[in-house]
Figure 1 (cartoon, one colour):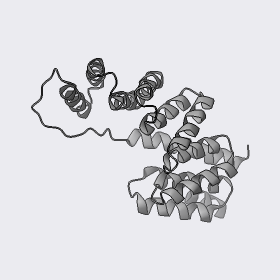
Figure 2: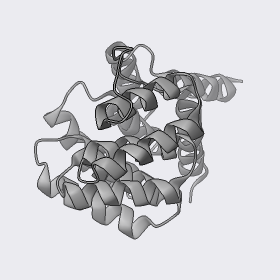
Figure 3: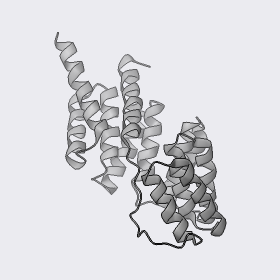
Figure 4: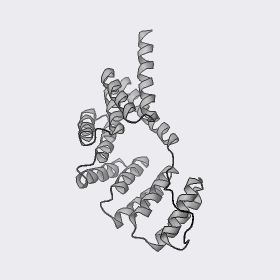
Length: 227
């Protein structure tokens, strides 16, 4: 692995850590009055607990809702996402797989499951899930972005470029694809192209901390080279 490739991959990994650390937990706003025995009531309580950062309570409430309606894939997906946020990928895998048992073409579950597999270093399963998602959802950019990121991790830059460009053709506003594309260009030493993609990503998503971090790293490298 060249020093430039190693640096680019390291920066992408660090940028992901930054992104996760800044990730807000979103919970739907719902009315205060509810029947606590109903699925809807339990979900309302779970989302309220989530907004209050009471994560263990949130998990308990999701499980109670699942007992009442085990075929509601959205409950499993939300629980899986919570487990991922709590850095419990094994539990997230179980939740996402249950979601897919209930709804085999649930894209949110497929993307979550792939991400959880990557966190436990099961790359073959992560790629298989993404490839299946790409087949099931040919008009979605998200599975292609995930596959492109996996190509970057294995230094398959040609494949990553193809997938990420295809993702941007499907969704030109996909800022994550542009950030990943910039990472490929950075690894190849094509800094002008990398900056172009990062600037576009920042225009599309002004709160994209990853893009700002990577752009600053390129400018810092240029300053070091100029000394």
